Amino acid sequence: MLNNDSTAYGAQETMTVPNSETSQSPASFPTAGDYYRSVFAWLSPSRENVSVKCVFHDDHSPSLSLNLTTGAFNCFACKAKGRDIVSFHAKRNHLSHSKASAELKENGFDITRRPASRSVNPEYAEWEQRYKLILLNEEAYCSAVGDLLHRYITETRGIPLAVIPETLRLHPNLHYTDQSGRIVGIFPAMLAFVTDPYGIYCAIHRTYLAEDATKAPVPSPKKLTRATFPGATKGGAIRLFDPRPKMAVAEGIETALAVHAATGLPVWSTVSAGGMESVLLPKEVREVIICVDNDESGRGLHSANILAGRLMREKRNVQLAVPRGQNADWADVFGGQK
Image (cartoon, rainbow, N blue to C red):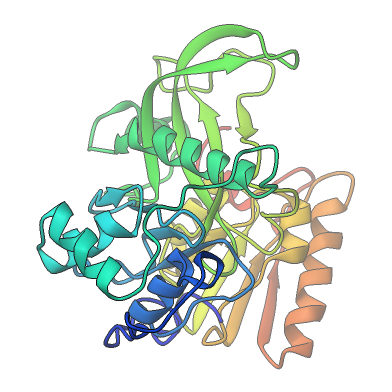
């Protein structure tokens, strides 16, 4: 299910747990995943890490990340976090740590388990990378009028946005590394989460900036972090705005912002031509404008046509918007310089 289905994320029901008097072997004790499945109405049975609507604040999109093996949780919005289900149970029910621990024990939960070591848990690397992305995002902050990110979008790129979407954040001093991993400089950077079709964060797109609000003088000012696992970003996008029945998609962040400023439509960035081909949109989206990058190689138009064909097979209305001029995109048309 997609993240706009309220039954898939964050809906609550009374916790149902086994009778503590029933004899159980340690291997049969309810797990962290069992606990979370008793709290939330629906969780994917095939994933270790899931995102749900946060129960600690008035959440309108999945911002609470859960690890169903370790019990660790973290909300990207209200910053609620903990390392296990004891912490979650205590916080959710306003209990002391000892009281929450005792209550879970009474209900048969094995709260003494620890996550498997890296050598025997192949999914540890996924959680570790996701945690690194969370930490990186927490080091950044939302843009304010007149700051470096706002100037880059509105002045350097010429996109007339009064407010920068909260999905874009400004990191004040991010290391830039070359292909060998050597740090060659420290620059401010625009950060944007790439989320998969379930709304789960799987990578961060970085645009390195100079102090004069232009792109940083580095070989590749736009870079994508390592995904949480191979193939995690397939079907994903940078969700700059909440989806509506009619929306648009574009490759680059700046192109998507320019289209939004010109049309008022919600727009998602697919990051690349490959992302354009594979992006998955919510079921309630019925009309899609595909904003094509008209590059010389023809790759942008080719990828747009692949997406258009799939969307039409899904019985959606599709329109291709191709800018005039070779090597042009809609950021050039609606905005300013690159």
